[in-house]
Image 1 (spheres, protein in one colour):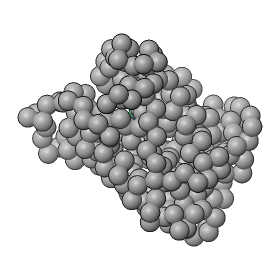
Image 2 (cartoon, protein in one colour):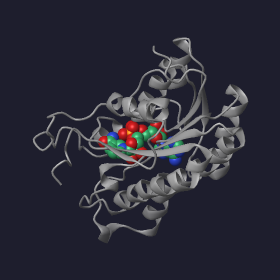
Image 3 (cartoon, rainbow, N blue to C red):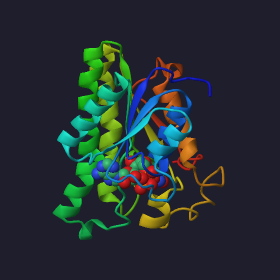
Image 4 (cartoon, rainbow, N blue to C red):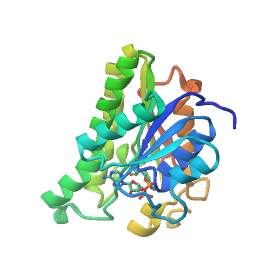
Length: 254
Ligand SMILES: NC(=O)c1ccc[n+]([C@@H]2O[C@H](COP(=O)([O-])OP(=O)(O)OC[C@H]3O[C@@H](n4cnc5c(N)ncnc54)[C@H](O)[C@@H]3O)[C@@H](O)[C@H]2O)c1
């Protein structure tokens, strides 16, 4: 523990599983109090709930059942964070879904609303509500959004996912402009293939691109969590509006 987030309160959406779970655990190890905001408490990959692990290791963690597509639920998760930990200093809009490969000819309105409401609306309102609290606190803050390399490049049969993650990538740049004068930094992470339930269960992507990945391995949730820690901490004090690719070099030649 190096206490890079000592005294900070963080809210991580989708933190029961995968990458969000690794981010929450890393933040707690670095001294942050963490709200785990998710539609489910049990990790998709199995194991002890994230908030329980944090508490067991002597940190401050709480679970707040939250559907990020519901603005009132997001507000509740933020209010519960401030009420339990005294502030909201770091907001990580991580919750997201991947519908599997789907040609545009098969996309219908229901698919669109489901995916966009979680992947894009959840980030828009998560950022808006977090910024309101951070502005009121008057001490700046950090917002970290989970986009994807699919937010910067096209991937076939992934129209809705690409549209949502492209929205997150550019929303991040825009929010950096609006919120910078209040000392609130806004950055995004653009992972490549990370080994989580999303790439092993929702769609069997993990392990299929190793020849194309220069580092010859899929990413681990901890690879993304370390970058989130950098973007949440004062080590990135002059970094805002950035989309940081974490893909083992996969898109370096694109
Ligand atoms: N795994 C990858 O290869 C990869 C690559 C690029 C980007 N991403 C992005 O990283 C983020 C995390 O993905 P992951 O791989 O950890 O996925 P995951 O499926 O392992 O975990 C996602 C978590 O989000 C939660 N969640 C889903 N819908 C929610 C909702 N409406 N409200 C609140 N929580 C909800 C789930 O319950 C789950 O705990 C997502 O935004 C994803 O799009 C993942």
